[in-house]
Length: 466
Image (tube, rainbow, N blue to C red; front, side, top):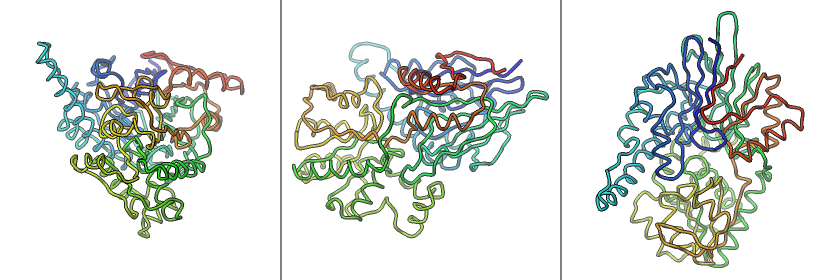
């Protein structure tokens, strides 16, 4: 048999990345992401697999965002016994992310079952618990540095390259030997962009036959990253003048640390007053510690600054909040302040209770610093719907909404084109991990520029790689 690629998740959508590569000797999984959506879809899609997890010979993990790693405990519960390969930083971040995911699911199911008992409906179970997630993260990982070639499975060799997306993120390459033939597959999902704060630029692997690449911003261009600090400064100064609060829904992994980087710079440069900054998330607090520990994954300037005691994660009036009671006291505090809390798409976590208490006051600002998927509260805020529901209660959106798309850690249309071009010649480019309109937009753009080997897989489509 030849080599086959099956795209099982993250096709024409941005969540649940998971792709199976099969050759005559091995089955290798690229990522095992959670599909993130409405509760019923979440449990249904993440519980069912179109392959047998027991038959996997290796799982190679690109990075620690849940839409790429979040279903690992489910696979283990269904019989997966193979090793999980990643970078060192990804392993440490993945442990925190998976445990938090298990905890959130337990809390969610506890709430659902309270209602189900009252209605006489069957009780439900989480995909996995915090304990099961912790067990999965401890036992299975084997880690490698960028550029180190390793044997992942029989006749399959892997190498990680810096993806420049988040700390420890990797472009994965697979070298597959089938008799006399050698096939090289590149997996760039997610791909970073040049000149991101703290991180190195993405590397370009050479000699690829096939490339699997994301399309999150396949039809859009980002403003220069340098503009982000200026717009962030303006929003903070405006809100302080109104005596309001700046509420920032941010992913606990990477985006929170980027915001701290900018705030640290502005405070040191006296571009904004020294107002209280609260990172209201135990998870973000722990992740920031991992960033400090693995600062060797950062660009030389940030790495040296941390080693010299000038860390962007330590500045005047910065507070990391673990205790829930302390979190709730922030609502009664009328001083201007910055509150950074998860989740990034406003679907769960402490950000909901901060939004509930601030969204109707026009003095306040909701600062959107990341991608908001369809059907999320975050997307409804981005689209400035007049009324939104939080905890089932309707609230009028009166707060100012400021959107900083320039902070995205995903490559935009031009960045994707340049990366794909640098990887040529290729037999085929598979476009994944993007809403359908973004995937089509990149496909059309590549065709206009003379790249005619792009293909847009469907969910669960299996393709032969000749």
